[in-house]
Amino acid sequence: MNKAQKFRRTILALLLLIGGGVFVAISPQFQQAPAPETKIEQPTGDAASALETLEVKGRAPKTGYAREQFGDGWSEANGCDTRNIILARDLTEVVTNDKCQVTSGILDDPYTGEIIHFQRGSGTSDDVQIDHVVALSDAWQKGAQGLSPERREALANDSLELLAVDGKANQQKSDGDASTWLPPNKAFRCQYVSRQVAVKKKYSLWVTAAEKEAISRVLTGCPGQPLPAE
Image (cartoon, rainbow, N blue to C red; front, side, top):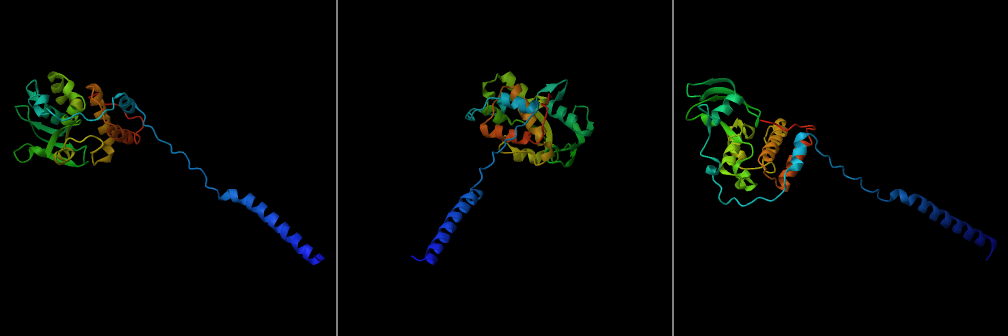
C-alpha cells in the first residue's frame, strides 16, 4: 500500500470516528421527551367538602317508587301549600289571592336565565313549575326508600330541595342527576350542584361515581362554593 492509499484510509477512519461521535452527541436531542404529568384540579369550598362525605354507590332498583311515597302532594303550613310558598319566595312582583295562591309574578328563571311572566290559570300555571332539585325517583334509588314516610315527606317539601323554574326545563330534566342533566344556564350550575349536595347530605342520600365526577367537575369552576342552608 503506497502513502497515498494509507493517507486516504487514515482520513476515512477519522471521518467515521468523528461521525459516530457527532451522532452520539446529537441523537439524545431526538429522543421523545417524557409526557408532563396531568394536574387534576380539585374543587374547594364547603360544597366540595360536603361532596366528599357522601357515600358513593350504584343506583338501587326503582322498584316500589311512587310519588305517594313522599307524601300526598304538597303539604300545608298556615293555610298555604308548599308550591305557593316557593312561588312567593322565588318570584318578584308577587300577587296573591285570599286563598294564599300566587296569581301572578315574575320569575328570573335559574335554569334557563330567561324572564317568565307567570300568570295563574289552566293554560299558564305550568309555565312555572316547582322542581325537586334532587328528583324524587333519584332520591328513592339512592337511599330515600330507607327513610321513614315522615322523613320522605319532609324531603319532598323542604325549601332546600325546591326551586321555582321554567316548566319546559323541568320536564327536560325529568329524574336525571348531575351526570345526565345540568341547567342550560351555565352561570347557575355551581349553585345547582351545591344544592343537590346539601340535600343529599341532609337526608343521608348517596351519589353514583358518575354523578360525583360530574358535580366535582362543575365545582372546580367555582372555588370556595358555599353549601346552601335553605
